[in-house]
Length: 560
Image (cartoon, rainbow, N blue to C red; front, side, top):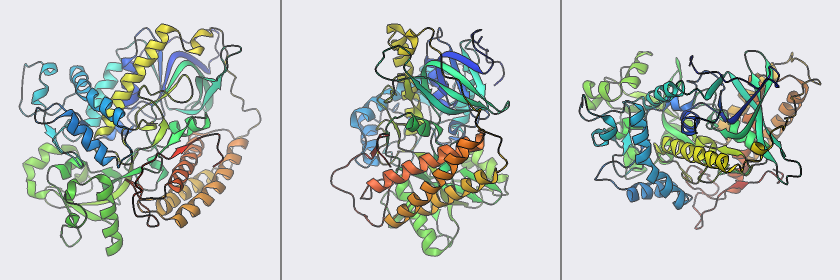
């Protein structure tokens, strides 16, 4: 990501300070597209916790769900989403986001994302040729409506977004920065409510905390799947935005709905690698170790059942048989078909001597997507003025109790666009309090009372213990006893981590662990509120679904 224009910092600020109109925390599809949609006269800073490629977008294989085929309809997409969401989707939100789909695909196509097409159309303007896009089908969808770039859609989108960002002189990227906390303050004397005025940011390379002053802040940090021992997500998915928003007094909702992707590669030589839903969409069969198919015992849609059903079915069969994995077989589609439709998966599996054209793929479920998050409206606005949350960080009401495949990237772009539009309109109307406070100064970061740590083993031990207990007690199948055990141990871990945080200088590992234990608590508390089984939350103590659906909303003023 070299070549991004560096903004000039205010001469009145020290070397550890930055200021901008809009601070975007996160460099995935949501963050980058929001930056691109903001007016170019606004200065924008994007924080990336690691290399910019370490975002869930980069690993997304499937594609984007959108209605662009004449045999499909917006209403069908809405209804599929509502059914998959288990009665908890907000229909007006679903309608609005689904309606935005064709325009999003048009925008990405015009940017140059190399979507897979049915036929080669050399010399044709792709911006006017959406009808040639190849569509695939995934779990829960009644039609083929997944627009994709082979089986590496995330990489294709990221490359185009990153390249376009480099052309914008108003955008500055700060990589290898970990946000510590949001800054709440009253920028205008006598103002009644706090406003989000920026963030404290840990500079990993220089080992110190910087201050970023901003008139608006956008959380685009992704989800919290690293709370679990096994996950398909990158290392950076530690729930940072959700935890920071909670500490900043924003409501959080439906955190119990953690989606476990049914098919993650099971192999000792490779950390969890996602086997796209599209493999099942194109005819892949789930098999027991003896080669027998089993999904007919769990759902009439077989391998194309909603993800929660497939994940529980695999989990059930693994426990019933006492095996480490099951298998996904696509060999019957033929070598040419597999190599052309799933080139990235094919090559990746070859790295561990697995030829998916000749043998089935060993798979296990893995934590994949956080359906809950920070409560927002359709503009991405949170409870804290000046703070927005978009993408997987947000809980908009689109996904409900279970996200339908490939609706996630759709939501990323839809909320990024609407947040950028809202921020731009507030700038034009000058309604952001921090915008009016021209000489407002942020409180400096104070680490005068802390020392360097000589006990990093505490971080390592608690990191592994937390993720193991979440996998064992708050996984695909839950019970009241397991949740109670998890809650007690998380409380002790929180005390240990907070004491450590209070006495020692921050590090990236410490900040991530602090956020993970916060998110773990939120997941458990939401799960304890739900005395039923719905969508992704299944408990043997309450196996039935209640007649009336409700959101699990946590309010920061309440004691957990």
